[in-house]
Amino acid sequence: MAEAGVDALLVRSTDRFLNEYVPIEDSTRVWLTGFTGSMGEALVTKDRAYVAVDGRYWLQVDKQIDGAAFEAVKVSVGQSTDQALWERIKALGAIKVGFEQHKTTPSEVDSMKKAIGPQATWVGLTPSPVDLALGSRESAAAPYNLRVLDEARVGATVDEKLATLANKLETLGIDALLVQRLDEIAYLTNLRGDELPYQATFKAVALASADRVLVGVEDPSRISAEVRAARPRLSFVSEADVWAAAKNGKVGYDPHHNTELGRAQIAQPVIVESPVGPMKAKKNKAELEVMVEAFARADAVVDRAQRWLSSEIAAKRKITEADFADQVRALFTESGAVGLSFKVISAAGKNGAVIHYSDPSPTRVIKKGELMLLDTGAYYAEGYATDLTRTFLVGGARDKATQEQRRHYTYVLKSAIAGMSATIPDGARGYQLDAIVRAPLWAVGLDYNHGTGHGVGVNVHEFPPRVGPTSAAKLEEGYVFSIEPGVYLPAFGGVRIENLCTLERSKSKPGYLEVVPLTFSPLDARLIDAKLLSPTEKAWLAKYAKVHGSPARRRLRGDTAKTLVKRARAAAKRAP
Image (cartoon, rainbow, N blue to C red; front, side, top):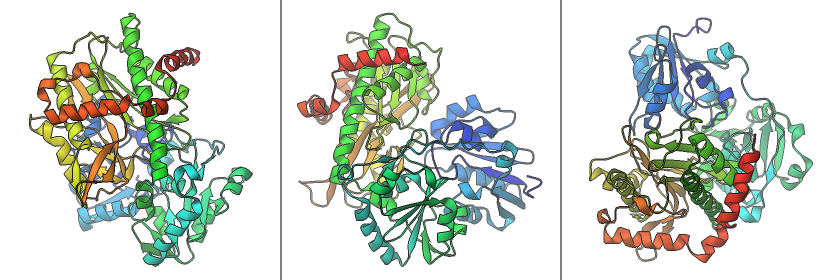
């Protein structure tokens, strides 16, 4: 930092591809702080250091950072980790602040400058002092294992997507669009990869014009002839070639979806709102059908995982949180999944209060009669993420939950039903649906310190949409998103119920949209206190259970539970 001439340094949780899930070995923030959560920013000054995290990570950050070296800055739902660190910068007076240009968006840079004012001088650093201290950390290049999607299964060819994009580029008055979000590149190209953990994307940067997409990769010679032949409108070039092409003509960049370093490569930059994000967010009929198939298979995995755990505990076998996570992974593999969409959250008892409990313990034995929180998801061949959370009672059908367990579970269920049965007017915003979901919990003095829902598509977290207290973006027909209320009490544990949903136009109420659930893994009836449910809620539950048990859903779920569990158990034993 002294050599770079800066008094403070901001260290991002993301990487140069703006990924949420960065391999631990590639993360400069993890190396610096020891905190492994997917989101959380760090600030280092000459004599103090901070890690700012949102409500999902309050408990985790205390366990992972060295309290003598770092101060945990805990922000509540609706607040920004960046803003919390800016307050610390303000307190330092007139200083020079270094930031990572290759990991920071132009909108973040503008927000920093506006919030802190002229007292701070901003210095873009690529590589950053942490990069230099650490040395090269980016994982060694893996073979490009790009999957060419059946374009009939995703409802639009690359040609059709470029035709739609061409009209939008003309309206925006630009010749090309810089695309750096990997899920947007995967969407435009109808390609998927397994180069990165918990994603179906591949490392690239792209420049999209009306009739062609330049796809910049580390080594274009490694792209197979099969991929090139299947996608003639794509030109695979080096990243340097993409930056060179950005010097020609008017090139649009989205200040929220490109990096500051990327913006600096453009000779004639034009600020735009990327049209690719909204195109990707509104799922067409074919995409919805493929996603529903994937969700049904994931529903079955979660259902079977619960049954397996309870049967193992009934047989008096010692099963740890890590054992259960391993079994979930084996079940997904046996169901045809090509990878997980995030690390399995396998949290027993009080560990359920850690909202993103991403490191299941190899020694914490799961006990009969306690709550188990399982949050998991996967990718199947078409490359759309699944995401589902179930909290259940460990034990057999005759085992009974405590009154406290039933109460907390039922109020979370009431909130989930409120969201999944909601009818909202055209133009409704994410914060309005968020309030609908929270209302049953608020009524009894409970709440949760995270957003209510996030978009799901090529990535398990995508925007738009978003459902949260500060989410002002419109909710639109065809969006796919989660509804996931919860209760988290350190002395008790945690309860979360998460389902994926979409929005359809109401047939009975013109001008309104209806939330429609797309995931139907069973809910634990032992944890439901029927006395706390209204007649309407009971009727909704009956309809929900009927959909899960329908012949159509059984066909989508595929193999029988007995056969799949048997094969998965064998696979788990064979695993190293």
